[in-house]
Image (cartoon, rainbow, N blue to C red; front, side, top):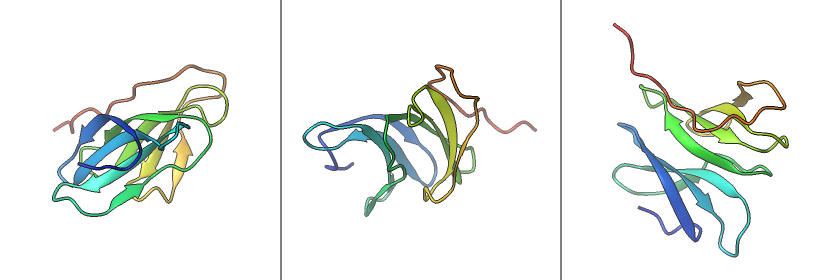
Amino acid sequence: MTFEGNYNTSPAWSPKGIASRTRARGGGRFQIFTVALGGGDVKRVTSTSGDNEDPSWSPDGRYLIFSSTRDGSGAIYLSDAAGTRQTRLTPPGGDDSSPAWSRWLE
């Protein structure tokens, strides 16, 4: 899938691509990266301090939720697939982790 970083885990599949947490070579913090299903460019979604882990795609593949310690405690964040807009969803001071989307309700 990718040779970005030296530790890639927690893949999340969508119809549009794969997201995973990746640790940079030489150690460091985990960040979220994506790659299209057919291969191609690896895109970094997060670039903050703290660890960014456990990505999960929205059912339509437009958004990712993930856990992050960027503000000192565990919180859940929402990001567009490109990583240009990220919003904290849970309040400060928690230990929130392992988010997951549910399927569309009909």
